[in-house]
Length: 404
Image (cartoon, rainbow, N blue to C red):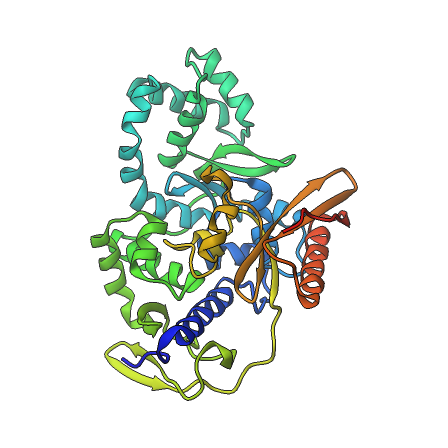
């Protein structure tokens, strides 16, 4: 295959092209005219352990949407929140949650066996918690986390020391419960099959193919290693899934790395600056290899984005590069504590973080760039902060951040 030039300049050009294509696949830039439900469906699963941050991750990809639109989708059972993979909360569609759990839950649950033993949780405790959930939630019941753990305590199951959350986690992995309708700034627990009755079932091989295809659709360009990290399925299962949908994907080489994108994607379109003039990018479609020269540039799209913490743009891949310069990686996760801060993204690259503080009537945003912003960046980020405020239905205040 022919690469996109050689040397440091070509490597940077290839990285820019990867980021451009990922922003496009994820529906960040250019933005699509879609609903919040369609956003979640395209990305398959969107990290949402932080409910507020996950809400903005959905909203920013559905221009003009509001927090009320997401609430309505949750209340209608179009979107649910559960642990489809990696033991981490995600927004997803109910039927997608089911087949993902069929593929991932057994392995995830096994990985937590020691932790559960250390907490004193055994099969008997899980069985009692299951019985309580069925009894209390059947017939349209909905409970907050605090309400459910109180019922567990009343039923003789201790919930201190994280036991309560691990019991809920296990019931969700068993496909019994999920977080459904909005309740204040969080969600209520419901029975999955009662709240959103199943409408689609997938045999295992078909589900593995769907897993790979849908991941690449919403995240490509991506490698098979990226998918394995994201989904935590085995390499063997990932390879089986890839083979099942290979004819619907194409393999492109950028910067001497091979990535998968959808076969109907345009892997060489867009900003000509992303590749060296006159170079070619190689794409394999099925058994056919084509060499394509980058076409004329498309109209410009928004270049500046105020992404939330834990966004799929960063956490949808095994590596944080090339989106985050290595010297700034620790500033995205201060103290390596697992908490990813909201990100300022300029032309695909993370150039800072930002924080927000909410009251009943306003949201105060504080940008914290890694280096002084250009005038264009300042204008662009202010526009994105206004979008964020409109999504929340609040008045925007922009505060001065600390010196870089």
